[in-house]
Amino acid sequence: MKKTNIYRGFFYLGGLLVLALGIILNTKAGLGVSPIISVSYSISTILKSNFGNMTLIQYSSFIVVEMLLHIREHYKTGNSNLKLKLLKDVLQFPLSLIFTRFMNLFSAMIPAYDTPGVSVYYSSFPGRIVTLIIAIILTGIGAAVSLNMHIIPNPGDGIVQAISDCVKKEVGFTKNCFDLFNITITICVGLLFAGRLIGVGLGTVLAVIGVGRVIAVFNHFFKKKMAVLSGTENLN
Image 1 (cartoon, rainbow, N blue to C red):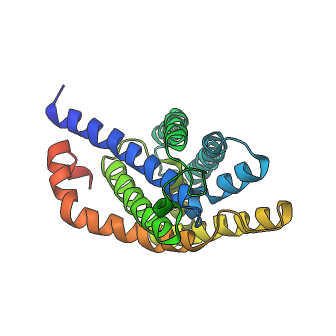
Image 2: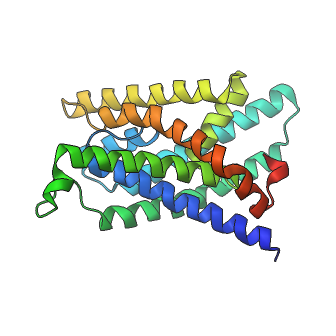
């Protein structure tokens, strides 16, 4: 096996681990979660069910929508490589299963800010802000590293790309719209079934702004170096 392939696999798996850790830390701060998983977080909180399992269901729905959009694009334009795209879509199912197991593992290991017996600093508002900032940084780094390896996209990124291709809009604009869509659903779910906001707060706003900035800064300093190590220079 080529050394570049080893690096590529290492970076990809490492990126997914860091991404999962960042997402869980975001939820543990209790200040609002990132838009892409706010729906699964609010539903799991209301139903008192497992957050990772609910995220798996949400990701699976994303993948199904991706597949439908790719089929639509193929029959509308005839220019897309349908088999390859559908293969990448299908491979997101086992990826989602593994990724959400990482989430469950980190969730079991890391206490929430309001867990009895945790550090006073961790449970204080300044401590929660620091935890949130760390979470946003880890989420951005994890997303950047895994995406830069061009293997299998996280369903949250995959559906944004699929929608972007379908509506012929820039990925950044599509992501902003999709984030707003998820936040709207989360607000409605919380108000209708719990009578309050769940999963939406300061952390949600900071995640929308901060994750993209972290990705940009990280790529500015490290993307080229990682591309050389992983042999992905021609894929960027």
